[in-house]
Length: 239
Image 1: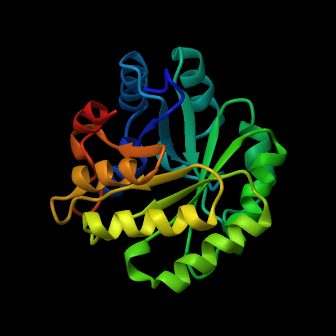
Image 2: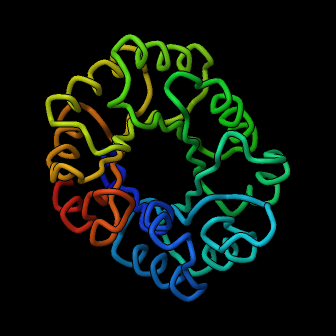
């Protein structure tokens, strides 16, 4: 999928799918998913949320022993976690996992990107790649989206910038317009995360790629919150 350096495919089964079972995947289930996805050549596998809060399910915490085992079990895939901007002690959380993860994805509100920018800086200071994910982009005006993208660009973080159609409300023409707007303001990589509420997740993903996105998300059988995600098997055929 990235043999020519063009498109990066990310699997979000365990993280986004975790909304359906409160992230209560067993250790064996997580390991089978990650090892299996690595074996078929998926580029990046999102294991779940990173947190050091006590009594969290494995996919809602991504504890060090789990990540260490996964790192040893896979051959080529990169390991990603999602990290909320308000997570307690982000420095300690990152320091404990810095050698075990390749990418930290940071969800942010379009109207308030500053907390995500601060986390992205902490991530990048530790030599880890970051992705700032603008959520529910369909709910905001062009002006609001443009202002958020400009703020992130001015901050100078080296993140990939993601557009997440969290409500599954976008049509292909909306996707093309939003990606074009971002690319006018943002010099780096752009990604797209679709939901299938309108039955358009695959078409929207294809549109995002045609508009210039180089990162794209899917999940096994579309497993995910709301109207589900783009089916990974169909997505792989696009790239």
